[in-house]
Image 1 (cartoon, rainbow, N blue to C red):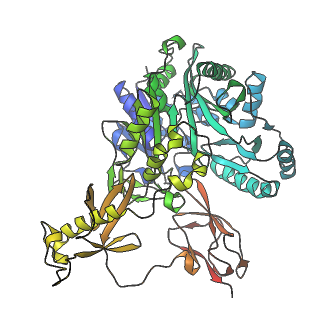
Image 2: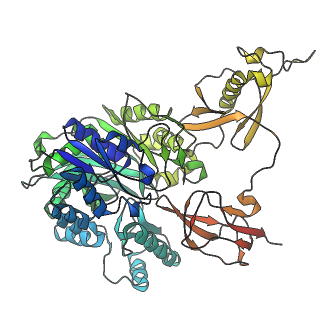
Image 3: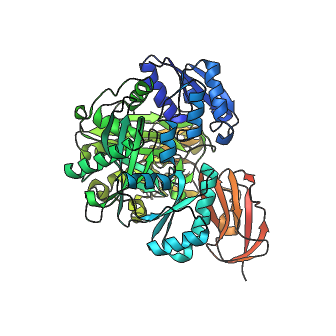
Amino acid sequence: MIRSLLIANRGEIACRIIRTARAMGIRTVAVYSDADAHALHVRQADEAVHIGPSPSRESYLQGDRIIAAAKAAGAEAIHPGYGFLSENAAFAAAVIDAGLIWVGPNPASITAMGLKDAAKALMAAAGVPVTPGYLGADQSPERLQQEADAIGYPVLIKAVAGGGGKGMRRVDAAADFAEALMSCRREAASSFGDDRVLIEKYILSPRHIEVQVFGDTQGNIVHLFERDCSLQRRHQKVIEEAPAPGMDEATRAVICDAAVKAARAVDYVGAGTIEFIADASAGLSADRIWFMEMNTRLQVEHPVTEEITGVDLVEWQLRVASGEPLPKRQEDLAITGHAVEVRLYAEDPIKGFLPSVGELQCLRLPSGVIRVETGVDEDDAVSPFYDPMIAKLIAHGPDRAEAIRLLADEVEWVQVWPVATNAGFLFRALSHPGFAAGAVTTSFIADHQDALLPPASPSDAAWKLAALSLADAHDGQLGLSPAQPWLAIAGFRLNQPRHAPVAVACGDDVRVVDLWRGGDVSGGTMAIGDDLILVEQGQTYGFRLARFGGSGAGAASDGAILSPMPGRIVSVDVAQGQAVTKGQKLVMLEAMKMEQALVAPFDGTVADLRAVAGAQVAEGVTLVRVEKGA
């Protein structure tokens, strides 16, 4: 058995691996960048080694530094987690050549399945059904456009080396293909160092079904059933569950058998996932499910499989890497109950899911009732350099309805401040009748976005509760009774009803709340400095006593386009003095692995252009100013 392990990753997956390794008596070594010097995974590991500056390309993507760190710390093995170098065949080979144990598949298997076009060709040869599309070597824009036209729109452009939703664009019309291809290639080159793409037919009622497979060095391969990861936003998974709703035993047998066949085709060892796309227009059926790709690593959503099978997949990885056979045979594995996972991200759904960064002054996650996987503690910071995930929340129940209920109940009371999160969005998704019915395709979020987005402003009851709490906390300033502010003499008028007005601010919204009026209120609040935070159906709002006077901050309505967060200018699409129309793209900003277009707020002229392609910018910096047309 491996005795010491270096985890070549960060955040929640590093903490997850450390937990299992420690339970197995394995010494753990963490690696960290400048930004992660005080991170939770660093604090939890037995030893930690610094590997470079904050940008991942200068630290977590530097394989030679990671191998050197393993040797310096006396680690016998390297576990890559997911993301970063986990599917990098050259890194895997370098680890092995250095005399270390690689906790993952053989480099040849990674190579075989790492490029989507080659993997699909291999699967077709192995008898695994694949999605119709173009996998050719001719990557000229003209040939790709021609193939897309022949396949018929909509089509999906996918980076051949892609993953995690990066380097993917849906195209609905021929006129949009060229721009989508350019954007897809740019993102693919940035994320994977490879701008080649393939074209697939876009399935109009798609469900994303994937099968967990596992192989050992003795040639045994098993599946651990399927997961449904259909609830996605911009091709990134938001809610995952196992087993897939509506999956009958006959269809399950076919898809799982196809997954094992795919793994055998590359002599697979370790944990892997075979991803399929299903045409769910008439329910799940074996003849309408096609191979998409294989992920040659552990998946973010692996906990739902662990919950329904009782298997610790990280333990299996470490045992197989140590040369042991799989702990269980296929006939020993069975599904028990149902599990659902949500990804809690530092992002603001109200502001177009803009990533949020900063210190977690308040972090209250569920405890005891459901499973929580996180890489941060209260007072840690969400960095602009990495994926904005705060935690994964996983509930297991005897059936799907109970698992969803348990999870929704816990998500409803998540408290994070002042970093914005998608908790309110997740609560609404879990509570949506369409999700409860299992009627979920990859377009579910887009189809129901208005119903899923939390309100920008809290309810009247929340305003009242906030006003009462603030009045109680600041009674000396308001002239109210500290014990019962609503009974104070302030606001008394002879021959008129009593009233006790308190001016309260929530963001840019200010209300004068009369503490004498309105019905009963209930709930919990928490003071963070001058802020009072309150959670309503998963959405965290910050209140404070309004302070009048001063001038308002500039906004897009005055023509100033500000950088919404720290990032890199990918492209500048306008010139000084150019006439622009409302909604026209001005600048493309890349931050936290995502591209965001900044657009003109109205028709006008570019009066001040400060953005420079390739430049790093801070949050709040003016990039462009547009003057309204005459």
